[in-house]
Length: 422
Image (cartoon, rainbow, N blue to C red; front, side, top):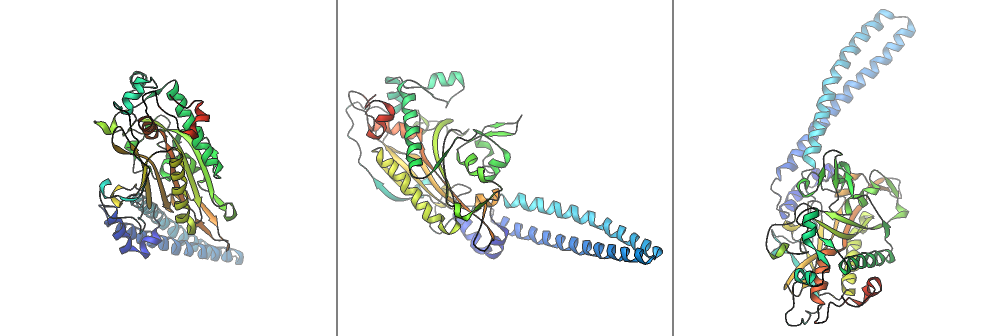
């Protein structure tokens, strides 16, 4: 959530920046400022009237002490009238503050100066591309055929158990999933991240805190009986661990990692883009989250991008790094880098990670602060990244490493998997 003081001080700049995100309602910025003006007016009226009540109440006490009861009773009548006038102002102030909040949360985060203009993924900027295209054997298959050949993922049973987009991993497919999760977590914890196992359901306050609400209601699975949401990513519960807390500056940066299943209702429509593991409703992901000093968040963003890059390099996959354009960024992000791996059999790029700096957008919603050296409370900056999302990594590993004799397992995974080949 943007801060009203920032909107007041940089009104034109905010509108220009939101245009880069292709935000269609820049007039909401003016509406926020107008509502804040009303809030200030009602607050002033309330304070003025309450001040009169306080002064007259003291006068009543003095009159009573002097034995001037008649004058005191007269003043009491005046105070009663003043207090009656406080009620409508209180109601108007509460209604204005509520409306201000409702409008404010509709504004997305302001993009960084590094964000390129653009409307679609085709406008994203390729920062780096590395690795070689594997030389596949004749008759190479896409992963949705490989998983049937080796009987490692069962989509049909998933449909029977739940519905489309809920795969069942079995045998060596389940073992490969477990190997990837363990390796990713070990890689992250060795870099200083503390591992968490958070709840897989969150309340409304948690979903609001990271920006899923009110922007992404339709993308999350909702349980109305409890007012809980199944998490779309570990980012939601993990970042909220520090909601409404003031941390010590000496404890920064706070580095957290977690493996969770993730649940997303939007799994696409038809075609190769959503076949097999390309897009599913439930998938596994290992996440990294950092809470950092605001002066260091872009340095940390670069470090997190390098961290994910080395992880992909260790798997031997061809990859590229994209800086997302304004139109392809999330509601809450100030700057996002996407990682994509090359799918040799499909001959296309598959997104496997996003690393984002949210600056103070999330922490303002969650009131995550620290005290600086002067004892003043400041908002931290939050960042998160996939390290990594498993379905498309698994798809790329299966396709890129297929041979006539089976599927080769990357060396870094062999001790976790217990074998060098499927």
